[in-house]
Image 1: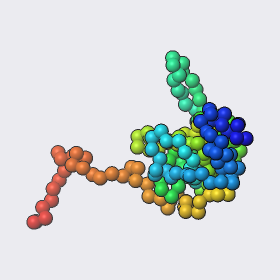
Image 2 (image 1 turned 180 degrees about the vertical axis):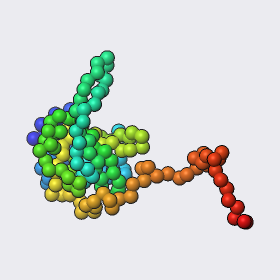
Image 3 (image 1 turned 60 degrees about the vertical axis):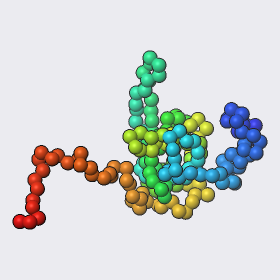
Image 4 (image 1 turned 90 degrees about the vertical axis):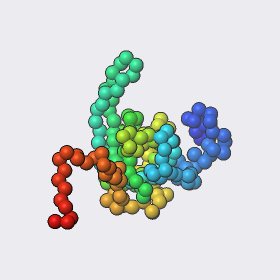
Length: 177
């Protein structure tokens, strides 16, 4: 299994690192996991989350060179104790295996080898070719709330600035009246 894992990682893992990955995938040794709030653009890591929504599959058009390709994508909202993100799944095999799972809001998941990016301020988590999704893992941390409603979503809230006020159509009332 070590040699297989090393080849999956294109030879980037030494024997010890490959052994840790194999043990983690077997559920026997926890690797360091990040939280949604600590994810930065381009970061690849493992993460524990809960489903915030039921997965939805849709078709989109992407450009590859001069070609236009129609591709199916599965998206769902996920969350942990620190925030929420969109999980975007492009891999057909992972998509098919998740379609057979009973994923509903609150379902715990462990996702290994996930890549993060930002789009319009939102965190997008994308599975890589090495990613694995485990539904209801035995080592799921208890500190992640069971419901997304327990989180505060600051993605669409911001401070009001003077530039936001339409000064031509505002009416002032005097406090001295």
